[in-house]
Structures are given as C-alpha cells and as structure tokens.
Length: 355
Image (cartoon, rainbow, N blue to C red; front, top):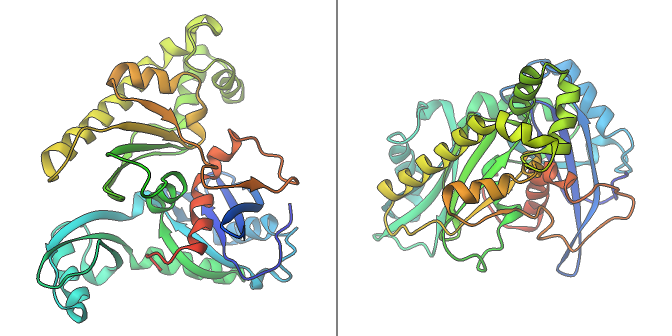
C-alpha cells in the first residue's frame, strides 16, 4: 500500500506491539485515507512506551516504509505519538495573565498537578474559549519528560523521517472519534489496546482528564489460555470467535472474563466519581464509547451498558473519513487498531497544539 507523494504529514502510531501509519488526503473537505499499513514488533523492542532496542526499531521503521512512493524516506514528514503511560494531560483553571506571561504562569501552576520537575519536562497547552486576560480561564495542558521527547525525536530523525509534531495519545484518539460541536454532554472514551487500556473523559469540547486502566487485550487472551489450558494463539482465536456472547462456546468465555469485566466497570465508575467530585459544572455521563482493537470483543458494549446503565457504543474509527483507497483491504473492525494513527493524520489539517 503505497504512500502518495506530497508534503502532508503521515500519522505514525508507535506502540509496544506494532507500528502503524495512516496518510490522509483531502478532496475539498472530504478526508480520504490514501495509505495505511502496520508491522508487528517483536517483544522487547518497545516496552512501556520506551524504545529499548534502537537498531531493531530502526529496522522495523525502514521495513514499514520500504514500499513507500514518498521517494526517499527522509522526504516523509511525520506526526507521531507520545506514550499515554509516560505523559500527563489535565484541564487547569486559573486567572489568565497577559499573554506574554502565560507560559511562565502555567509553568508555576502545573507543578501543583504533575509528578515531574518543571526543569525535566516539555509542556504545551490549548486555551479553551476566547482568551481574556484577567478573567478565569481554562487551559488544557499536556506535559511529557524532556528525555522521552528527545529519545523519540532522535530515533525518528535517525530513521530519516521528518518529525513534524509529537502528540499525546488521548488527544489523537479524541480527534478521531469526536465530531466537535455535534456531541452534546460528557462522555467516556475507552481505548482497549493489546498492551494497555486508557480512559478519556471528554466534556465541553475538550479532554477533562485521562487515566490508564489495568486491563488489555493480551491480558484477556492470557487469562483464557490459562483457564482453558490452550496456547495463546488458540486463546486469541477463541476470544475473536466467541467473545462475551453467551450463545457461543456455551458462554464459557463470558464466565472466564467476568472478573476482568467487573474490574473494568469498577474503574469506569471510579473515574465517574472522580469527575463528579472534582470538577465544576459537571453533569451525568451521556455515553461510553469503546474503541481500539479490544472494542471488537463481542457483546462487551452490551455488558458494560447492563452494568453501568450508561448507553455504550462501539466508536466508529472512520467517522471523519469519507472514503478509503480501494487498495487498502482492511475491514472497519481492523481500523479500530488504527484509531490513534487516524487521529494523528487528521492533525495535519488542524491548527492544533502539542507541536
């Protein structure tokens, strides 16, 4: 699946288990996925978001882009992601200073909220609403360790890619799933990944906070394998074939995974309580949106609805996409795994933040 030649940045998602890219082109105001591909990463190359083996990582980057019609890989601008587990994002409210003093004031304020020394981080922000000095204002602040940023920029440049921006994962996911101005009321986005799961609370057209959850697709597969005494590969096949459907596999997987799903629901309810107890002008959660590869687990949406009494849907990773190049054979379900890369690629058409 080749990349079309131009200077539009490519969205590159880096996770512990795979590299994925998406390139979006525009026809008028219509977003079209022109190219998309992935490559699996052997265990240990990336761990907990940190690139542990740079040589092997570079080899996989080169392999991923080997069929690119970008010309030389060095001609490809990239918008990539910073790992959720290593970053911080929070909505901060304070009196807005004169614009020229904003950065210094935010630097002082965020030290009260983040577990990093201000000298060891890089941070950026988005103003919520129209900026009015002297009045109470909300700022969505993102921060990451400077060493992490330097490592990511260095490795991408070593691969002869051109880093255009690095973005916090929650921001990319929200961009891919949320139609700004059309979604009313607070909602929870749960990104169920192979290695980790994140919860994003979105309200008033911005992220309020995000947290990591102790559940993952790999963890679920391992539990099935352990209980049924089968291989990981067979357990993964069973997970896909049966899911949480009581009518399939005699409902065996639903019973096996009951505690895991209850733990997930407990964390959702804890996050809702945190939102209600610590945020002003809050209201009832209107919707839970599941995304990521784990969202394809059959009946998960129905079970979460039953346990929380909150409408729960499977998010559409192509909600902002008009069409997909015919050469790309991925199903809509497969694109769940590309949701971060899609959000990163959409960044190319927005004057946003976290550059």
